[in-house]
Length: 248
Image (cartoon, rainbow, N blue to C red; front, side, top):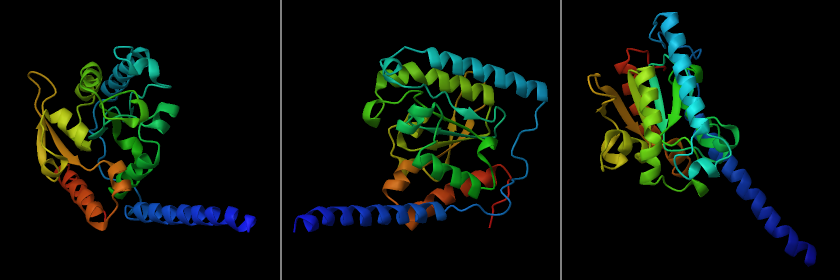
């Protein structure tokens, strides 16, 4: 009897793990890569010297971020997460804030939500190295809580400078926090997604088109064919706007 009382919870836990694994596989399979993973024209084809200059300027910002102590998050983090990717990217993905995996590695979107983002990027016929990925906050809030106003105020200038340097043609705001912050709006992600908005990066600069869509962490928590379809519809609009082929 004692053995049975000990083994039964273990069996339940194993079944739960297997079920969760299968659900995760279903999510990732929904955004399986199509074609050879190579899009036509993923870069803006700027002068190599100009791209190198962009890379240098982005690294300067990254160095500042790693030294930043403007808010309490700077003393609580394991690693700052400045963002990474192509300095000449046509598409820039912006999330809310780093999570535990990102805090541990100092890189954006490397956990489960990041794996799903990689699948979405690949489903678009692109590779992670073709885009730039960052967050509104560069440090992880404790227990993944929502960003506080003072933290956003302190950290947002880093992202704004990155956008000005990269000059993306389209920003994809992942989730409500990123979209609301960049668009300075109180509208819900349901109201914002599926259409292009304008993000203004600075005085005298032309607006950047912004597409809001669901955060990949939200998709993992609320997986359904309908939510997956909505994200894919949003990304297809991005590809059409950039005159990139839509993988079949």
